[in-house]
Length: 535
Image 1 (tube, rainbow, N blue to C red):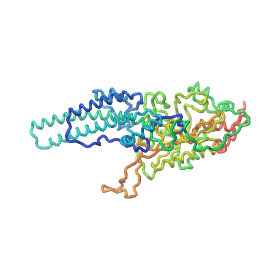
Image 2 (image 1 turned 30 degrees about the horizontal axis):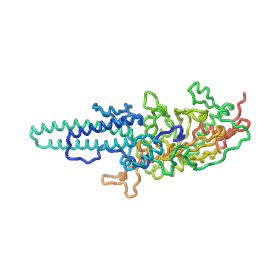
Image 3 (image 1 turned 180 degrees about the vertical axis):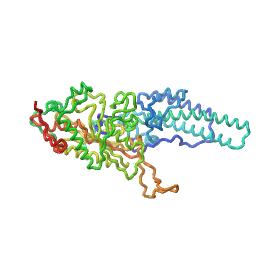
Image 4 (image 1 turned 90 degrees about the vertical axis):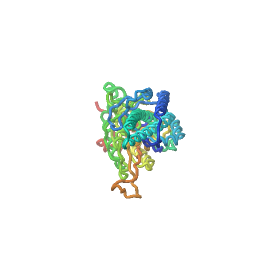
């Protein structure tokens, strides 16, 4: 995702999460209608109480018709609506392909994962709702069986009185079935809203705890020793006329900025150099839309609404400004089945990013370190499940190579469980030394999200089956191998403002000028030194 600490969330990995079919239970020969109604009323009284007890742990989602990803948002049904006698149809929200059976079978592991991640997801409620769903599915299926039995009886010769009785019975069954099917939709929607709060599972090697528990994987370079007083990037930028925070605050508000003079060339140089370096590794370059539908943001694992959201939502629409190119790149292949031969798909995307930075304050966030809008180059990979750990290593190695070529001193961290965002199975952060700030600051991260995002985005691939030719009895070209969900990974190649912070502070000279790192010079018109402007 990139700069994870600025855009966090809560986070199921290798619990293979598959959609629950509406009808999976075996039928019985008969169903007493009064008993079915009684069980239904009991079920929803319990459901209402459960949802009421746990309402503080839920966040709102957009409810959409499954047939249209672009349908207008509808209010989420609360517990009183679900338990009400007004059974008007509620369109279900988008559905994640969650394997609830696997959650049941791995309940202890899921519970431990929630604890380690400090997640507020309500596992007990998810299991309770799922069990109630199975019960209601069975009742619906049994009613359908009865209705079909009545219809079959009417196909033959039937006495007029018996036919009339069958017609009335069929009508009653149809009405009861309609009511139960509406209940099923509402219960399915409630279950999805609760289950989507459950974070991804965690790699077994991830350290348990918060940021302080993170383990240093590697340290590259050493801090530069200065023989003169160090300036931070804010002072350097002011003296070299590189940016203007005051004017930007007047125009746009705090945490915005103007880049000026060589800082503009430095931004462009960083972007073009990074793209050229990553493209050498077989990545396809992209520029992306910078507005995404809320459902895509949600499916990628981010929360577009709530008191502490990092997402800018566009009022009067179902759209948001993106906080990372991970979101629009993840959406490119939404609801697709990819060919096995097409994998892996590697993208390197340039975009502007927008984050509210809710709650961010203090000296550690001054200047360019934490801003509302910035440019970023993001890497994104879709691959086969068995390959994601390998590509995770590749992504972090690319990042380390880039920052080493720029001459930075940095450390790579294996981040603790409580610091992982919702989709991340494992996350490596890179923190670079910023001498002007006198501390390490995060400049990049690389996350393996396994199938957490692809199960929400509906991205699958069909493995090639070497045991058959792809031909079935019904015709040619049909592969017998069922599709599987891909794994997705993301990593920041260059977050421009923080890279500018690092370069200005590490390459400053005693006379106040700043040396341009050699790899960037061809991308900045040959400029070797950022100097004071003559008046």
